[in-house]
Length: 468
View: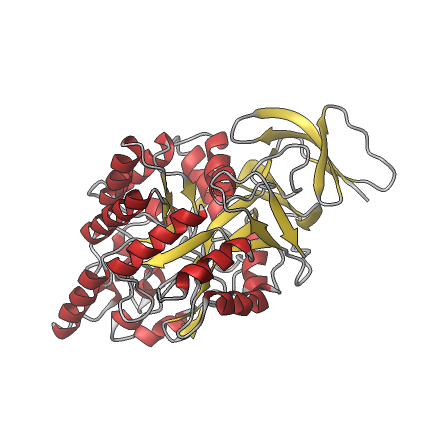
Protein backbone atom coordinates (compact mmCIF):
# COMPACT_ATOMS: atom_id res chain seq x y z
CA UNK A 1 0.00 0.00 0.00
CA UNK A 2 1.31 3.41 -0.98
CA UNK A 3 0.68 6.88 0.37
CA UNK A 4 -0.50 9.96 -1.53
CA UNK A 5 -0.16 13.44 -0.05
CA UNK A 6 -2.48 15.81 -1.90
CA UNK A 7 -2.33 19.54 -2.43
CA UNK A 8 0.15 20.66 0.19
CA UNK A 9 2.67 23.46 -0.17
CA UNK A 10 5.99 21.67 -0.45
CA UNK A 11 8.78 23.57 1.26
CA UNK A 12 12.46 22.70 0.85
CA UNK A 13 15.55 24.78 1.47
CA UNK A 14 15.45 25.94 -2.14
CA UNK A 15 11.84 25.68 -3.34
CA UNK A 16 8.26 26.37 -2.34
CA UNK A 17 5.37 25.16 -4.49
CA UNK A 18 2.03 23.31 -4.35
CA UNK A 19 2.07 19.70 -5.53
CA UNK A 20 1.18 16.12 -4.65
CA UNK A 21 3.65 13.53 -3.34
CA UNK A 22 3.53 9.79 -3.94
CA UNK A 23 5.25 7.43 -1.50
CA UNK A 24 5.98 3.74 -2.00
CA UNK A 25 7.94 1.45 0.28
CA UNK A 26 9.49 4.18 2.37
CA UNK A 27 10.67 6.23 -0.62
CA UNK A 28 9.30 9.28 -2.42
CA UNK A 29 8.49 7.97 -5.90
CA UNK A 30 6.59 10.83 -7.49
CA UNK A 31 5.93 14.57 -7.23
CA UNK A 32 3.45 16.35 -9.47
CA UNK A 33 0.04 17.90 -9.85
CA UNK A 34 -3.19 15.93 -9.97
CA UNK A 35 -1.61 12.61 -9.04
CA UNK A 36 -4.26 9.91 -8.78
CA UNK A 37 -4.61 7.54 -5.87
CA UNK A 38 -4.21 3.87 -6.73
CA UNK A 39 -6.09 0.97 -5.26
CA UNK A 40 -4.97 0.53 -1.68
CA UNK A 41 -3.28 3.91 -1.40
CA UNK A 42 -3.77 5.97 1.75
CA UNK A 43 -4.54 9.59 0.86
CA UNK A 44 -3.72 12.58 3.06
CA UNK A 45 -5.27 15.97 2.33
CA UNK A 46 -2.54 18.56 2.92
CA UNK A 47 -4.31 21.56 1.39
CA UNK A 48 -3.44 24.74 3.28
CA UNK A 49 -0.55 23.04 5.06
CA UNK A 50 3.24 23.09 4.72
CA UNK A 51 4.80 19.80 3.58
CA UNK A 52 8.45 19.63 4.58
CA UNK A 53 11.22 17.04 4.85
CA UNK A 54 11.24 15.43 8.28
CA UNK A 55 13.42 17.39 10.66
CA UNK A 56 16.78 15.95 11.71
CA UNK A 57 18.06 16.61 15.21
CA UNK A 58 21.86 16.61 15.03
CA UNK A 59 22.29 16.81 18.80
CA UNK A 60 20.51 14.50 21.25
CA UNK A 61 21.47 12.32 24.22
CA UNK A 62 19.09 9.38 24.68
CA UNK A 63 19.51 7.24 27.84
CA UNK A 64 22.89 8.87 28.46
CA UNK A 65 24.76 7.80 31.61
CA UNK A 66 25.85 11.15 33.03
CA UNK A 67 26.60 12.73 36.40
CA UNK A 68 25.52 9.69 38.38
CA UNK A 69 22.23 9.07 36.59
CA UNK A 70 20.81 8.34 33.12
CA UNK A 71 18.89 10.81 30.97
CA UNK A 72 15.15 10.22 31.29
CA UNK A 73 14.30 9.41 27.66
CA UNK A 74 15.47 6.15 26.15
CA UNK A 75 15.72 5.70 22.40
CA UNK A 76 12.05 4.72 22.14
CA UNK A 77 10.46 7.49 24.19
CA UNK A 78 12.89 10.10 22.92
CA UNK A 79 12.42 9.36 19.22
CA UNK A 80 8.65 9.08 19.74
CA UNK A 81 8.65 12.52 21.34
CA UNK A 82 10.61 13.73 18.34
CA UNK A 83 8.01 12.31 15.95
CA UNK A 84 5.26 14.28 17.70
CA UNK A 85 7.40 17.37 17.06
CA UNK A 86 8.20 16.61 13.42
CA UNK A 87 11.64 15.07 13.93
CA UNK A 88 12.19 11.89 11.92
CA UNK A 89 15.90 11.22 12.36
CA UNK A 90 18.38 11.85 15.19
CA UNK A 91 22.13 11.90 15.64
CA UNK A 92 22.94 10.68 19.14
CA UNK A 93 26.34 10.73 20.84
CA UNK A 94 27.95 7.33 21.30
CA UNK A 95 30.02 7.86 24.43
CA UNK A 96 33.32 6.11 25.04
CA UNK A 97 33.16 4.86 28.62
CA UNK A 98 36.10 4.49 30.98
CA UNK A 99 38.35 1.70 29.74
CA UNK A 100 36.33 1.18 26.56
CA UNK A 101 37.57 1.07 23.01
CA UNK A 102 35.54 3.02 20.46
CA UNK A 103 34.17 -0.17 18.82
CA UNK A 104 33.10 -1.47 22.24
CA UNK A 105 31.19 1.77 22.84
CA UNK A 106 29.44 1.38 19.48
CA UNK A 107 28.38 -2.15 20.39
CA UNK A 108 26.88 -0.86 23.63
CA UNK A 109 25.07 1.98 21.86
CA UNK A 110 23.59 -0.36 19.28
CA UNK A 111 21.97 -2.29 22.12
CA UNK A 112 20.49 0.91 23.55
CA UNK A 113 19.28 2.26 20.22
CA UNK A 114 17.55 -0.98 19.12
CA UNK A 115 14.33 0.50 20.60
CA UNK A 116 14.31 3.60 18.36
CA UNK A 117 11.20 4.38 16.31
CA UNK A 118 12.95 6.72 13.85
CA UNK A 119 16.16 6.34 11.88
CA UNK A 120 19.30 7.33 13.73
CA UNK A 121 23.06 7.55 13.56
CA UNK A 122 25.83 8.60 15.95
CA UNK A 123 28.62 11.02 16.57
CA UNK A 124 31.45 9.01 18.15
CA UNK A 125 32.55 10.73 21.38
CA UNK A 126 36.22 10.29 22.23
CA UNK A 127 36.86 10.82 25.93
CA UNK A 128 40.42 9.50 26.04
CA UNK A 129 42.97 9.51 23.23
CA UNK A 130 45.45 6.64 23.55
CA UNK A 131 47.96 4.79 21.37
CA UNK A 132 45.24 2.69 19.70
CA UNK A 133 42.79 5.51 19.12
CA UNK A 134 43.89 6.39 15.55
CA UNK A 135 43.28 2.80 14.39
CA UNK A 136 39.96 2.74 16.24
CA UNK A 137 38.89 6.00 14.62
CA UNK A 138 39.60 4.51 11.21
CA UNK A 139 37.51 1.46 12.10
CA UNK A 140 34.67 3.71 13.30
CA UNK A 141 34.58 5.47 9.93
CA UNK A 142 35.36 2.65 7.52
CA UNK A 143 33.66 -0.32 9.19
CA UNK A 144 30.84 1.25 11.19
CA UNK A 145 29.90 4.14 8.88
CA UNK A 146 30.15 6.82 11.59
CA UNK A 147 31.83 9.85 10.06
CA UNK A 148 31.69 12.41 12.86
CA UNK A 149 33.45 12.51 16.19
CA UNK A 150 32.71 14.46 19.37
CA UNK A 151 35.08 16.07 21.82
CA UNK A 152 34.28 17.76 25.12
CA UNK A 153 36.52 20.64 26.10
CA UNK A 154 34.67 20.71 29.44
CA UNK A 155 33.76 18.35 32.32
CA UNK A 156 37.27 18.00 33.75
CA UNK A 157 37.91 14.69 35.47
CA UNK A 158 35.15 12.96 33.52
CA UNK A 159 34.97 13.24 29.73
CA UNK A 160 37.09 16.30 28.94
CA UNK A 161 39.99 16.05 26.47
CA UNK A 162 43.03 18.25 26.93
CA UNK A 163 44.64 20.35 24.21
CA UNK A 164 47.12 17.64 23.27
CA UNK A 165 44.34 15.12 22.77
CA UNK A 166 42.25 17.67 20.87
CA UNK A 167 45.20 18.31 18.53
CA UNK A 168 45.59 14.59 17.80
CA UNK A 169 41.87 13.96 17.32
CA UNK A 170 41.64 16.83 14.84
CA UNK A 171 44.70 15.47 13.01
CA UNK A 172 43.33 11.93 12.67
CA UNK A 173 39.82 13.11 11.72
CA UNK A 174 41.27 15.19 8.88
CA UNK A 175 42.96 12.10 7.47
CA UNK A 176 39.63 10.26 7.53
CA UNK A 177 37.50 13.05 6.07
CA UNK A 178 35.45 13.09 9.27
CA UNK A 179 33.74 16.02 10.99
CA UNK A 180 34.72 16.85 14.58
CA UNK A 181 31.86 18.19 16.67
CA UNK A 182 33.00 20.24 19.65
CA UNK A 183 31.56 21.17 23.03
CA UNK A 184 33.54 24.38 23.40
CA UNK A 185 34.13 25.61 26.95
CA UNK A 186 37.41 26.12 28.79
CA UNK A 187 37.09 23.20 31.19
CA UNK A 188 40.02 24.22 33.38
CA UNK A 189 38.53 27.65 33.99
CA UNK A 190 35.09 26.16 34.70
CA UNK A 191 36.54 23.69 37.18
CA UNK A 192 38.36 26.43 39.09
CA UNK A 193 35.39 28.79 39.07
CA UNK A 194 33.17 26.04 40.43
CA UNK A 195 35.61 25.31 43.26
CA UNK A 196 35.78 29.01 44.18
CA UNK A 197 32.00 29.42 44.21
CA UNK A 198 31.45 26.31 46.32
CA UNK A 199 34.14 27.44 48.77
CA UNK A 200 32.31 30.78 49.08
CA UNK A 201 29.02 29.02 49.85
CA UNK A 202 27.43 29.91 46.52
CA UNK A 203 25.53 26.66 45.99
CA UNK A 204 22.20 27.33 44.25
CA UNK A 205 21.39 26.76 40.56
CA UNK A 206 21.72 30.51 39.95
CA UNK A 207 25.49 30.06 40.27
CA UNK A 208 25.68 27.56 37.43
CA UNK A 209 25.90 30.32 34.76
CA UNK A 210 28.33 32.27 36.95
CA UNK A 211 30.72 29.33 36.80
CA UNK A 212 30.59 29.22 32.99
CA UNK A 213 30.68 32.83 31.67
CA UNK A 214 30.43 33.51 27.97
CA UNK A 215 34.11 34.43 27.63
CA UNK A 216 34.95 30.83 28.53
CA UNK A 217 32.85 29.58 25.61
CA UNK A 218 34.23 32.18 23.23
CA UNK A 219 37.84 31.34 24.06
CA UNK A 220 37.29 27.60 23.65
CA UNK A 221 35.50 28.10 20.33
CA UNK A 222 38.46 30.12 19.05
CA UNK A 223 40.87 27.43 20.27
CA UNK A 224 38.91 24.55 18.75
CA UNK A 225 38.72 26.31 15.39
CA UNK A 226 42.45 27.00 15.51
CA UNK A 227 43.15 23.32 16.15
CA UNK A 228 40.93 22.37 13.22
CA UNK A 229 42.58 24.96 10.99
CA UNK A 230 46.03 23.47 11.68
CA UNK A 231 45.00 20.20 10.05
CA UNK A 232 42.28 21.26 7.61
CA UNK A 233 39.71 19.46 9.74
CA UNK A 234 36.02 20.24 9.36
CA UNK A 235 34.83 21.46 12.77
CA UNK A 236 31.22 21.78 13.93
CA UNK A 237 30.69 23.78 17.12
CA UNK A 238 27.66 22.49 18.99
CA UNK A 239 25.06 24.36 21.08
CA UNK A 240 26.48 27.86 20.64
CA UNK A 241 25.05 30.31 23.17
CA UNK A 242 26.88 33.63 23.05
CA UNK A 243 28.19 36.47 20.95
CA UNK A 244 31.85 35.66 21.65
CA UNK A 245 31.43 32.18 20.16
CA UNK A 246 29.44 33.45 17.18
CA UNK A 247 32.05 36.08 16.43
CA UNK A 248 34.83 33.46 16.60
CA UNK A 249 32.97 31.32 14.09
CA UNK A 250 32.35 34.31 11.85
CA UNK A 251 36.05 35.18 11.80
CA UNK A 252 36.94 31.62 10.85
CA UNK A 253 34.34 31.41 8.10
CA UNK A 254 35.25 34.77 6.63
CA UNK A 255 38.88 33.69 6.50
CA UNK A 256 37.86 30.74 4.33
CA UNK A 257 37.87 27.99 6.95
CA UNK A 258 35.33 25.19 6.48
CA UNK A 259 33.48 25.07 9.78
CA UNK A 260 29.94 25.04 11.08
CA UNK A 261 27.93 26.25 14.04
CA UNK A 262 24.79 25.01 15.76
CA UNK A 263 22.51 26.70 18.26
CA UNK A 264 19.34 25.60 20.07
CA UNK A 265 15.95 27.22 20.76
CA UNK A 266 16.63 27.68 24.48
CA UNK A 267 19.57 29.96 23.77
CA UNK A 268 17.46 32.15 21.50
CA UNK A 269 14.34 32.31 23.66
CA UNK A 270 15.34 32.11 27.34
CA UNK A 271 17.55 34.28 29.54
CA UNK A 272 19.40 33.67 32.79
CA UNK A 273 16.50 34.85 34.95
CA UNK A 274 15.21 31.26 34.72
CA UNK A 275 17.84 30.12 37.22
CA UNK A 276 16.20 32.05 40.05
CA UNK A 277 12.84 30.25 39.87
CA UNK A 278 11.69 29.23 43.37
CA UNK A 279 11.57 25.76 44.90
CA UNK A 280 14.69 24.63 43.06
CA UNK A 281 12.85 25.38 39.82
CA UNK A 282 15.98 26.86 38.31
CA UNK A 283 17.55 23.41 38.23
CA UNK A 284 15.37 22.48 35.24
CA UNK A 285 17.38 24.96 33.16
CA UNK A 286 20.84 23.80 34.20
CA UNK A 287 22.66 22.77 31.04
CA UNK A 288 26.08 23.50 29.62
CA UNK A 289 26.91 25.90 28.19
CA UNK A 290 24.34 27.82 30.23
CA UNK A 291 21.47 30.04 29.15
CA UNK A 292 22.83 33.58 28.90
CA UNK A 293 21.71 37.05 30.01
CA UNK A 294 19.21 38.54 27.59
CA UNK A 295 20.39 42.15 27.61
CA UNK A 296 24.04 42.06 26.54
CA UNK A 297 23.75 41.07 22.89
CA UNK A 298 23.84 37.27 22.98
CA UNK A 299 20.32 36.84 21.64
CA UNK A 300 20.93 39.40 18.92
CA UNK A 301 24.13 37.68 17.81
CA UNK A 302 22.46 34.27 17.67
CA UNK A 303 19.39 35.48 15.76
CA UNK A 304 21.64 37.32 13.33
CA UNK A 305 23.75 34.19 12.91
CA UNK A 306 20.83 31.96 11.98
CA UNK A 307 19.47 34.62 9.63
CA UNK A 308 22.75 35.40 7.82
CA UNK A 309 23.96 31.78 7.62
CA UNK A 310 26.93 32.18 9.90
CA UNK A 311 25.13 29.63 12.07
CA UNK A 312 24.22 26.54 10.10
CA UNK A 313 21.80 24.38 12.07
CA UNK A 314 19.32 24.24 14.92
CA UNK A 315 19.65 21.29 17.27
CA UNK A 316 18.17 20.75 20.70
CA UNK A 317 20.77 19.08 22.95
CA UNK A 318 17.82 16.96 24.12
CA UNK A 319 19.10 15.42 27.37
CA UNK A 320 16.21 15.42 29.86
CA UNK A 321 16.35 14.79 33.59
CA UNK A 322 13.36 14.73 35.91
CA UNK A 323 13.00 17.04 38.89
CA UNK A 324 13.87 14.14 41.17
CA UNK A 325 17.05 13.51 39.21
CA UNK A 326 17.95 17.19 39.35
CA UNK A 327 17.66 17.05 43.16
CA UNK A 328 21.02 15.29 43.22
CA UNK A 329 22.38 18.83 43.12
CA UNK A 330 20.16 20.26 45.85
CA UNK A 331 22.61 22.27 47.91
CA UNK A 332 25.44 22.02 45.34
CA UNK A 333 24.83 23.26 41.80
CA UNK A 334 27.89 21.39 40.49
CA UNK A 335 26.02 18.12 41.06
CA UNK A 336 22.83 19.04 39.17
CA UNK A 337 22.63 16.78 36.10
CA UNK A 338 23.12 19.01 33.07
CA UNK A 339 20.37 18.86 30.44
CA UNK A 340 16.74 19.39 29.45
CA UNK A 341 14.15 18.13 26.96
CA UNK A 342 13.53 19.90 23.66
CA UNK A 343 13.21 17.53 20.71
CA UNK A 344 9.42 17.84 20.58
CA UNK A 345 9.38 21.63 20.85
CA UNK A 346 11.94 22.62 18.23
CA UNK A 347 9.94 22.85 14.99
CA UNK A 348 6.95 24.65 16.48
CA UNK A 349 9.21 27.13 18.28
CA UNK A 350 11.22 27.76 15.11
CA UNK A 351 8.03 28.46 13.19
CA UNK A 352 6.46 30.59 15.93
CA UNK A 353 9.48 32.68 16.92
CA UNK A 354 11.76 32.38 13.90
CA UNK A 355 9.33 32.55 10.96
CA UNK A 356 6.42 34.37 12.59
CA UNK A 357 8.93 36.46 14.54
CA UNK A 358 10.40 37.75 11.27
CA UNK A 359 13.93 36.35 11.68
CA UNK A 360 13.84 33.95 8.70
CA UNK A 361 11.43 32.37 6.24
CA UNK A 362 10.11 28.80 6.13
CA UNK A 363 12.73 27.73 3.59
CA UNK A 364 15.50 28.82 5.95
CA UNK A 365 13.67 26.99 8.75
CA UNK A 366 13.82 23.78 6.70
CA UNK A 367 17.49 24.37 5.99
CA UNK A 368 18.34 24.89 9.66
CA UNK A 369 16.27 21.98 10.93
CA UNK A 370 16.69 19.39 8.21
CA UNK A 371 18.69 20.12 5.06
CA UNK A 372 21.88 21.46 6.65
CA UNK A 373 22.24 18.65 9.22
CA UNK A 374 21.69 16.09 6.44
CA UNK A 375 24.29 17.75 4.22
CA UNK A 376 26.92 18.34 6.90
CA UNK A 377 26.72 14.83 8.31
CA UNK A 378 26.24 12.85 5.10
CA UNK A 379 22.61 11.75 5.42
CA UNK A 380 22.25 11.74 1.67
CA UNK A 381 18.71 10.30 1.52
CA UNK A 382 17.29 12.79 4.00
CA UNK A 383 16.83 16.53 4.35
CA UNK A 384 14.79 17.29 1.23
CA UNK A 385 11.67 16.32 -0.69
CA UNK A 386 12.60 14.82 -4.06
CA UNK A 387 12.06 11.61 -5.94
CA UNK A 388 14.31 8.90 -4.52
CA UNK A 389 14.63 10.46 -1.06
CA UNK A 390 13.51 8.73 2.11
CA UNK A 391 9.82 9.30 2.80
CA UNK A 392 10.41 11.12 6.08
CA UNK A 393 7.92 13.98 5.85
CA UNK A 394 6.26 16.43 8.23
CA UNK A 395 2.98 18.19 7.46
CA UNK A 396 2.64 21.41 9.42
CA UNK A 397 -0.65 23.22 9.87
CA UNK A 398 0.17 26.92 10.33
CA UNK A 399 -3.31 27.79 11.59
CA UNK A 400 -4.35 28.06 15.22
CA UNK A 401 -2.45 28.67 18.43
CA UNK A 402 -1.11 26.46 21.17
CA UNK A 403 0.96 26.39 24.34
CA UNK A 404 4.01 24.30 25.13
CA UNK A 405 3.68 22.24 28.29
CA UNK A 406 5.05 19.19 30.07
CA UNK A 407 1.43 18.09 30.46
CA UNK A 408 1.14 17.44 26.73
CA UNK A 409 4.64 16.52 25.57
CA UNK A 410 5.65 12.89 25.06
CA UNK A 411 9.05 13.01 26.73
CA UNK A 412 9.42 11.21 30.04
CA UNK A 413 10.69 14.44 31.52
CA UNK A 414 8.25 15.96 34.02
CA UNK A 415 9.13 19.56 33.16
CA UNK A 416 9.31 21.61 29.99
CA UNK A 417 11.71 24.53 29.85
CA UNK A 418 9.34 26.25 27.41
CA UNK A 419 6.34 25.84 29.71
CA UNK A 420 3.64 28.37 28.81
CA UNK A 421 5.24 29.53 25.56
CA UNK A 422 2.57 30.58 23.07
CA UNK A 423 2.99 28.96 19.65
CA UNK A 424 1.41 29.19 16.21
CA UNK A 425 0.36 26.15 14.24
CA UNK A 426 1.15 22.53 15.00
CA UNK A 427 2.58 19.34 13.54
CA UNK A 428 -0.47 17.80 11.86
CA UNK A 429 1.19 14.63 10.51
CA UNK A 430 4.59 13.03 10.73
CA UNK A 431 5.52 10.33 8.23
CA UNK A 432 8.47 8.08 9.06
CA UNK A 433 9.83 5.68 6.44
CA UNK A 434 6.64 6.08 4.42
CA UNK A 435 4.22 5.42 7.26
CA UNK A 436 2.10 7.83 9.29
CA UNK A 437 3.60 7.80 12.78
CA UNK A 438 1.78 10.86 14.22
CA UNK A 439 -1.64 12.12 13.16
CA UNK A 440 -1.65 15.27 15.26
CA UNK A 441 -3.29 13.55 18.21
CA UNK A 442 -1.72 10.15 18.74
CA UNK A 443 1.49 8.29 18.04
CA UNK A 444 1.47 5.18 15.87
CA UNK A 445 4.96 3.80 16.33
CA UNK A 446 6.50 0.36 16.52
CA UNK A 447 9.29 -0.26 19.00
CA UNK A 448 12.53 -0.96 17.16
CA UNK A 449 11.31 0.20 13.73
CA UNK A 450 14.09 2.78 13.44
CA UNK A 451 17.17 2.00 11.38
CA UNK A 452 20.83 2.78 11.91
CA UNK A 453 22.06 4.85 8.95
CA UNK A 454 25.68 4.45 7.89
CA UNK A 455 27.50 7.31 6.22
CA UNK A 456 30.47 7.80 3.93
CA UNK A 457 33.68 9.59 5.01
CA UNK A 458 33.18 12.55 2.71
CA UNK A 459 32.11 16.02 3.76
CA UNK A 460 29.46 16.29 1.09
CA UNK A 461 28.56 12.59 1.15
CA UNK A 462 26.75 11.37 -1.94
CA UNK A 463 25.64 7.97 -0.71
CA UNK A 464 24.48 6.39 2.53
CA UNK A 465 23.46 2.87 3.32
CA UNK A 466 20.76 1.81 5.75
CA UNK A 467 21.25 -1.22 7.95
CA UNK A 468 18.07 -2.67 9.41
